[in-house]
Amino acid sequence: MNGETIVVGGGVIGLTSAVVLAEAGHRVRLWSPEEPGATTSAVAGGLWWPYRIEPEERVGAWALRSLEVYAGLLDRPEETGARLVSGVHAATPLDGLGAWAAEVNGLRAATEAEYAPGDGLWARLPVLDMPTHLAWLLRRLEAAGGRIERRKVTSLAEAAEGARAVVNCTGLGAARLVPDAGMRPVRGQLVVVENPGVDTWFTHTGTGSESTYFIPQPGRLLLGGTAEAGADSLEPDPATAREIVARCAELRPEIAGARVLGHRVGLRPERAGGVRLEREELPGGGVLVHNYGHGGAGVTVAWGCADEVAALVDA
Image 1 (cartoon, helix red, strand yellow):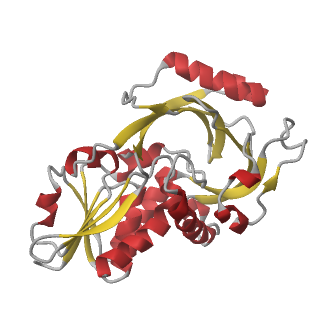
Image 2: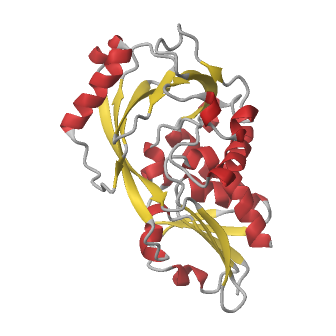
């Protein structure tokens, strides 16, 4: 056993876990078959909010810890990708949220001017430009002595050979590597357009596979979306894209004429029973910590989960 800690998975969950471990003094290698900018995390809208994630009794603490970290990154948006942006969550009653909501500064019912139907929440929340943020996390990992290796992992046992600890942040890959039959993809499709002057975000998740949201990012506006449980196609559907633009334009008519810059599809790693974050003892004295199944809220809970990972590795 060589004392190294190997983190498997290069999305926001794996990168953040690797950063926390490396800065705590661990010798960290991160294994990923792709660069962070090619992961599902890079496709995410980047709005901090606990969306499609369980268990509720643990999510609040993870999310609030991450919110605290992002608050410290807001003064360097070009470097960290973190900005504070106002917006409305439609059809979201304040009393329907968990205890964590009381700790979010300024979270309140939206006024009629902010959202005419009257059942929304207004908030000023961190929005992460994910390609920028992932690149910043990678630089921070390297500055702490960690390194990333492009490597396709065929089994967690492969990672455990000789390592003191392995951290499994493989998202949907856990279905095969653990194996975990509770994992399923939830397909999300976005349209990227030139921003016609929209400076607030909006979300309405709905009850089916369709949702409506727009999130301003530097130089562009992200339009969404879908939440198609069990669907795994990464090909954008043209009809779905047109419907997304139309739904967003009903709320902000200027979106209808915005030039389309591109299309994105990502597969959210959802797990029956919620996030798996726990420690296993391995034969020979090694440790395996699982940290996967974060659904649609990886960026929202990344730092809280990473702190818990570090505590479990050192337990």
